[in-house]
Length: 202
Image 1 (tube, rainbow, N blue to C red):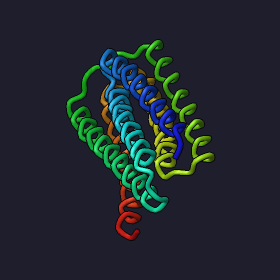
Image 2 (cartoon, rainbow, N blue to C red; image 1 turned 120 degrees about the vertical axis):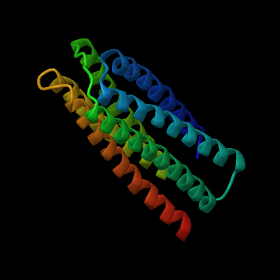
Image 3 (cartoon, rainbow, N blue to C red; image 1 turned 180 degrees about the vertical axis):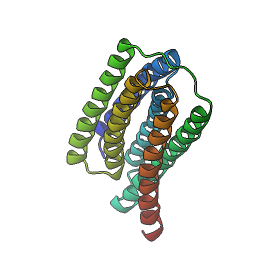
Image 4 (cartoon, rainbow, N blue to C red; image 1 turned 120 degrees about the horizontal axis):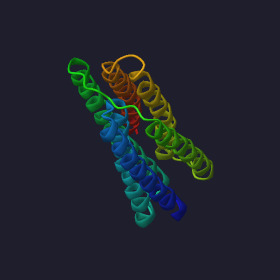
């Protein structure tokens, strides 16, 4: 572990927090549940990057051996996956509520462009994590890489849903919220299971 890992984790915190604020603004302004859920997902990612930062700092300061370092990183990945899973469950619940009680969503080309730009930022973040993982392999980076690509797909889906809302009807916003939540929850559950298995068997 090197100080560069701390810089990368800090970079992740700053980016995810910025994406959360942008998507939250668009989600609330347009009343789009899909984009709002995407913003909540980025808030979860902010906490995930924060946990990764604490994990890296602990490893560096404690100067622990490779085996214990692997366990700390696995524990961080487990916590990250758990946070993401809770986020996914929240999106499913909110999506079901919105589907049963739909509300009008205000489509805007400006909002759509903003969300597309946030998707591009997630791709850049994934590339940064991939490069860092090559230099300093870590299950934490692998979790962040997977999460970044997943976020890109989710944001793309949110934009599609945002566009289709004014073409079809606003009840579909709830459907997209449910789908996004299920994707997040499924991916996170897989990660949590893998890291829990490692922690138990190690």
